[in-house]
Length: 139
Image 1 (tube, one colour):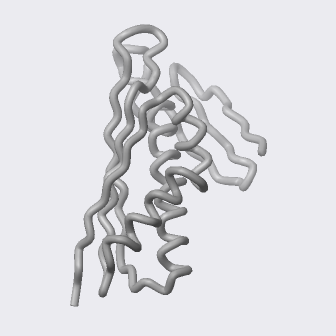
Image 2 (tube, rainbow, N blue to C red; image 1 turned 90 degrees about the vertical axis):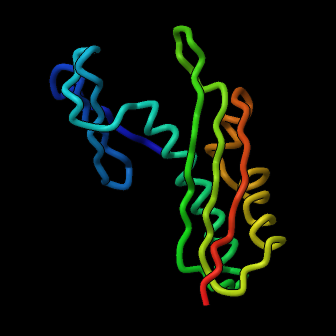
């Protein structure tokens, strides 16, 4: 996998992924940025959420569950030192669908956390990562 990050100006950078997608990253004004894009550490957090949500949905859909929505809400804590790395990340999944069973959703979240999500498994070697879920049933 390859990627390129190109400086634009100030603290603004343009990231280009191998798949051809771009993202703007920038810093806050108090660090010389103009708040024109997402922060790099936010990108890491979103990557964990996206990776895990991808897995959870794939597992649930392969199991022919009737899913209409999946939201992963992430909260993170960072250490109060330089480098300000993550110390804790929590993923809370809100799975909406019909006839969903707790055990099935719990299994999907656990498989993502322990076997499939490369991002959270990699970060989990140095960050405390926890998961939980809620099911929103629709008729």
